[in-house]
Amino acid sequence: FLLLCTTADINDVLYTRIILAKENRLRRLPVYGYGYSNGGMMVQTLLCRKIIDTGVTLNGVMALKSDPESSFEACDKLYKNPRRGRGYVDTRLANIHCLDDERVPFDGEAPKKLWDKIQFYLGIYFIPGAKLPAIDENMRRWAERVGCQANTTSTTNISSWTQQKEWTCPTPKRVVSIERSNCTYHGRAHRVIKTSDFDPARWAAEFFLDVDKA
Image (tube, rainbow, N blue to C red; front, top):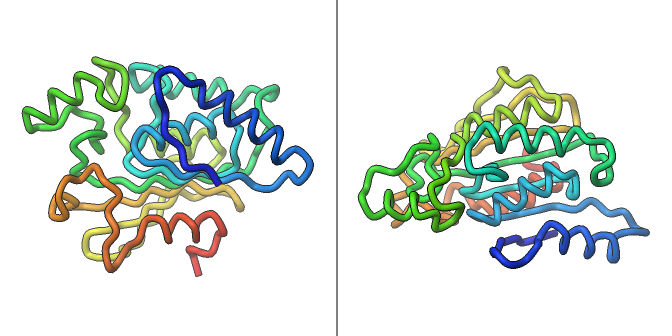
């Protein structure tokens, strides 16, 4: 189980690969990634490279390149390369995101508030001047990438302000998007927000163990 965050001067991908090669080479246990914000970007990077089995990202998105389409294409190339990683074919990814996230906007556009907009363009969490993908399109591309039906989803209302969208995938693959509205009610939206009706950490653990459907 990996809790991830990225820094500019450390190769987290190589570090993770080395640790897993050392600690998990013989037992070959499943490896799960759980990351918030740029840590979520890191989790999706590890999934692209097929270094981990399953990931849950919070307020994160694919960010391999400085524009969405280039990021998608880079991940496609890495994921489909049979010489990379251990060649996982049963990828499972879930993303938990606030619709009103001011740092990693759900629609990929710059936020409306001036200070948030300045920070967005300065690249506080990413490359200065970069454009992040829209969350829905990012997850749809993940569904397509791992062999799910990219345009077929089912939705479940977890609560009045939290909805689960799941793409139709061959078992055991899964691609899930948890969309939460009005997160700013709890302060700033770009945070890990636990409420009485939804605990992101608990939900992630159940997703990892594949018991969240029970």
